[in-house]
Length: 406
Image (tube, rainbow, N blue to C red):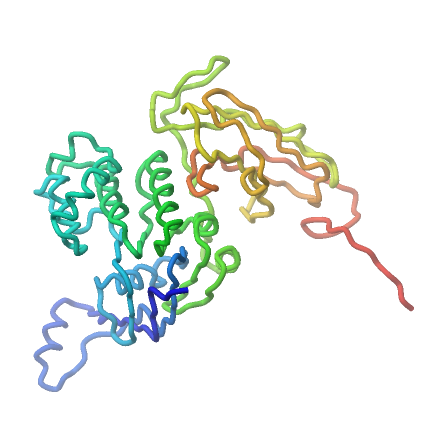
């Protein structure tokens, strides 16, 4: 495969001053006295990215992820080391960065295109597709200073993703915008990936990295902690986050829908058109179990679109401390669920619960795009408890055998 990004021994240091005046003192001090402390944001990064890769970049806040992306795009210059880029880069680092607030949306499309190296004539060929993707109506002819944050997100993403880049860099951009817009962006990113575009994707939602990316790199304190197949790296990263002394990140963003219409017996569309579907009821066959008894969960949900492509349903079991035990979904297990407008019910069944004594929580969620876009999520939708006479210890019962050899 063709290498499109090659990074060798990349280092980025920042000078930190206690007071703004210390910078001036350092500049004029005849003895060359230092008034700063060095902060090493990246320390010896080595990374090779091949054409067509979708690489997820994981790491806690302050680990160096955004610094790495800014170095790749040329926003920052390295202290030492080399970065070799082959191809045109389009980056979504800070949505709306580079927009002139006094220009209209249309004028900013041309401005951003020229900043990415496209002529006005070339951008004229692309502008209709950018405007259609942004879908902000007549506001495209208004100054962007009057735009809402959602309009900013739509226009910035539309410009960056519709210029046919060789390399697309996305830093937490999917945290902005409604579900419909997120779905649209993911679909477009999939098209780019399938056409051979290389994608660098930063997200705190590690499940998005697992499902969208084929590779992942974990940045820890400015260094590469692990690099490899995305599912394996995500598992390593999540295990570290769970067992670190700091609070772990949420694996799935939980969205509380506050403006839904109450749905009783009759099917009623929500007042908010951005609500695509809702989980309306979750029932369990009982709340107290013994190990190996059958668990049956009935999940009712409603779809408010004519249809939702790639709709999937997930169910996850957690401990009360939010330790993740098990989380299948209908996409992974190739089960098709109803995705057309109306009310639907699905049964989730575990014939023999292998869990040992304790209380457990069941989360239920509706997603699309292979689980990348969260449509509606119910954390701790219900709880159940398992009690037994003493016959084993631990969290789960694993089938096993003993053999006496002597």
